[in-house]
Amino acid sequence: MANLGFATTLAIFLAMVSTATFVTYTEGAARAFFVFGDSLVDNGNNNYLATSARADSPPYGVDYPTHRPTGRFSNGLNIPDLISQQLGAEPTLPYLDPALTGDKLLVGANFASAGIGILNDTGIQFANIIRMPRQLELFQEYQQRVSALIGAEQTQRLVNNALILITLGGNDYVNNYFLTPVSARRIQYNIQDYSRYLVTEYRKILKRLDDLGARRVLVTGTGPLGCVPAELAMRSSNGDCAKEPQQAAAAFNPLLVQMIKRLNQELGSDIFVAVNAMEMQNDFINNPKAFGFVTSKIACCGQGPFNGIGLCTAASNLCPNREEYAFWDPFHPSEKANKIIVKTIYSGSDKYITPMNLSTIMAIDSV
Image (cartoon, rainbow, N blue to C red; front, side, top):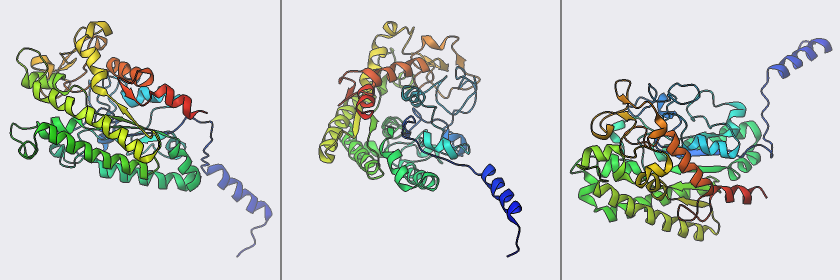
């Protein structure tokens, strides 16, 4: 090897130091936050996929801080954004976003993908979406990437201390069981038996999260499926919530709560927290004016009866004041409704979230 001399060697070393990226994990930082699930919590992963299940064009994002579409199925902030605010953290980036590198990885990651469900045959019409087995594989990949930055021990601590949100179930009804008048799953199951099957499969997903290091997980079920503008447009002649989807949600959510209680007992810890999205949304759907809404039946953005037909596009009807609408598009709550949901997740009673709410989780975990 040539003798470069001390001065030259020192200069090369300093140049290497100045261009290197040092990533450290500090205990005092906001806890990491990971998100799994469907369009209710997708922060833009589907922007990077060849699928029709996307929200990357106007008027999506009209009330987001940038006033531009981000891939969130909302006029503004979605549920993960608002939970990040409660944690005192910046929003998690979609895992497929090339900007998710370095220190950004320590904030967490959003693996959710619009159109997916508990079952792999849900949302087949959307083609290239990130189904749950793949979301969990990407979580493993994430941990490997972070281990290369801060080491395996610190990565395990980051994941163990993280908050996780998973939102599944709605698409397994809307984009599977009820997708066509005669679907394969309808032939196979009645609503009650199908709901039991879904909860059994959901349990496997939660158990896998536990295996991957999850220690505090918010688990949501379905909202009142028969009351969303899309179902009113397709199945309701008088504006009453559609009967069969409501029966499905009423069957699924209690079964989910029971399963989570049993799973926590089996694991010997309150790892999983059941979020009853149906109860949370029932409040403002049944009494919209009490929450400052003009309507909980008509979507802000859409067309046809209740603005519930098709997609929200630049050609759709668009309400001038999104604060007055519980639903942004035919399926998804408005930012204002999302704020009500997250406020209930944070401080609601066991009618809405059990065995504890998010403020209690944060207090316990800060000790």
